[in-house]
Length: 99
Image 1 (cartoon, rainbow, N blue to C red):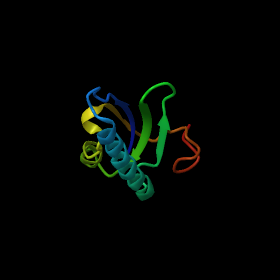
Image 2: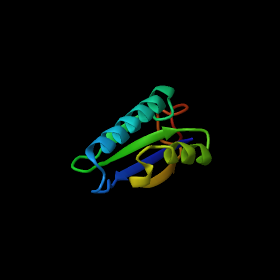
Image 3: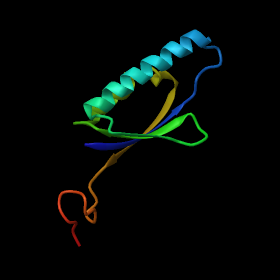
Image 4: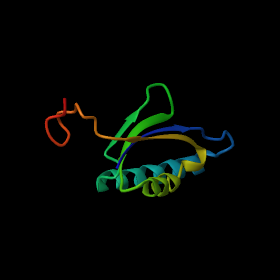
């Protein structure tokens, strides 16, 4: 199942620099592990914001929830999830499209 996910990060001002650096390093390692596994095939930064658009390819809603809630930055995120389906006119998806 494919999901379009927008993640907006809102870090608290009271986090000290060392704790923030460790948190961001853990986030990067976890996200890259998911990317290498194929579960997080696309991620794009939103220009001018501490936010991203991502595509996740996982087996279920529950699997996506588990992945997102395990993100080290999860407590500081607003997340919007949109389930995706193949468009019948997409010539690159499962054939030549339907008219």
